[in-house]
Image (cartoon, rainbow, N blue to C red):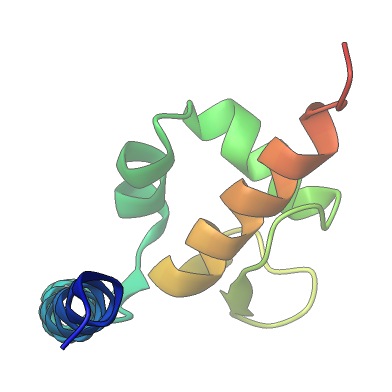
Length: 101
């Protein structure tokens, strides 16, 4: 077998092994952090944000959340999906990034 063909075969094998290992690691990592429902205080900790700021974002409907309680309730309960918050964070990062500067 020519050296070029042997080298190409070795590289193809290494690529396949690496692909398999990466897929296994990604699957394991995804299983470690499943979607969970967070309370208001848990969301504050998760986002590293003050209660005032998070409440303002909820009131302005700028962050994904669910409200439990009657309309106009003095004490509504806010709940958040951890996966939706992760997606929201990524969207905010993209909005703040300007390419080419």
